[in-house]
Length: 168
Image 1: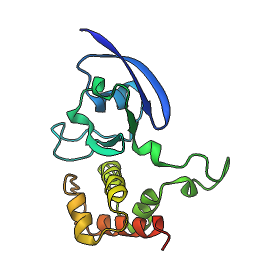
Image 2: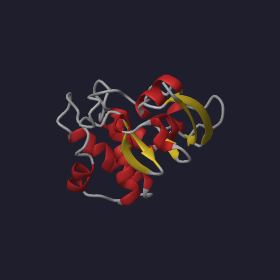
Image 3: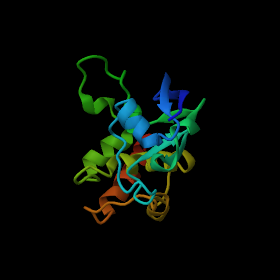
C-alpha cells in the first residue's frame, strides 16, 4: 500500500507524518497522533462523534482521508483547551474552553462519548453565530447524535457558553 507524507497543523502545532494513502482522518488522529478525543462512532458520517474543525469549519473526520488535510489546519477537542491559562498547577477547569466548561456545568454530557463531537460542532456554530437562540443551536447541532440525553442540556450548554464567550 502506498504511503503519503502529510504536512499540516494540528491544534496549532506543525505535524509531518507518513500515512497509508487510504487512512481515514479519524484513524490518523486517533492511531497516528494519539488524539483519542475524536471518537469513532458510526463511521458513515451520521453520528458526528468524529467531528473536528478543518480550517475552522466542522467536518466529520470519518468521511475524509488523512491526505485531504495536506497543508491545512485541524483542531480537535484536545486543541480547544487553553493549555497556557493559569500556568502550571492551575485548576484544570480554568484551562478549558468555555464550551467545555459549560458542558460540565450544565450537564450537557452523560456518558461523554458524543460530547467531543457536539463541542466541535458548537464551536463552529458559535464562530458563525456568536449569540444563537435555542432553535439555531438545535439546527446547528443536527448532525450530531446523543443516545443518552434529550438534548435539552446540550442546547443549554451551548447557550451558556455563548453568553460567556460574548461577555454577558
